[in-house]
Length: 280
Ligand code: AMP
Image (cartoon, rainbow, N blue to C red):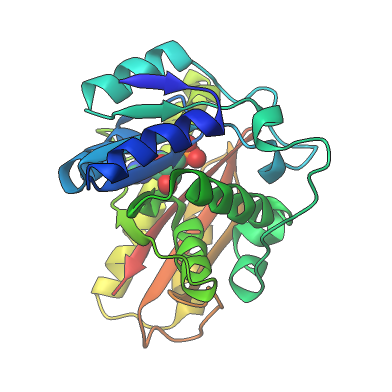
């Protein structure tokens, strides 16, 4: 497995692979890899001849008040994880390699990005769409792999690929959780022991919402209100949002009468965590 820092090295490597008729999978990440990321690498390795993992903490998707500087980084450990899981190439560029001094072109999206995390993080999805487009152009993969953990991001990327006629298959992979239910996240490292315990309120609330729907409840206001109340039982937790939206448009719905997404963002202390479940 090779680690490269420049776009040219990626292009040269992929060109060689394509000459040999090999298929390429891409797993875009911000690094500090855990089993959630590893599951995406596994899916790519299984279904493609070659797998590229990008590791890039993308400044463009962070607002000035967010955790760009403190975001955890450990490229040595990440390289081991990629190697163990059979990745072929790590692309780990510096911000200057991705964004030159003159950079001023963006990929933006309406509708889907104006709800859920897009409300609390207004520039986030513009940064995500722009960097993912660039990665798609650099790597030219056949397949790309994204986690259901970031369900809105997955929906946004699927929409972007469709709207902009990108010839790449987007594959969604299930949420990987800790044994006690907490969704794995690089940001879990921010939590103190007490906060780590409190963070369980997210998955517990997911389970509550899911069980209400399984029992036949279809009124989203009732489900959301029970879920918010449940979050409020945890003193260290502060709800950012709990919403039930149409799975394709990310717009709120009153009744669950179509494929839907129930998504939440909750602050545990200063750390903002997300979780969700699909209703199919
Ligand atoms: P990140 O490094 O947080 O930007 O995540 C990179 C990719 O890994 C995204 O597609 C995430 O949705 C995915 N991912 C992160 N955490 C998990 C998880 N717990 N289970 C599945 N996929 C995940």
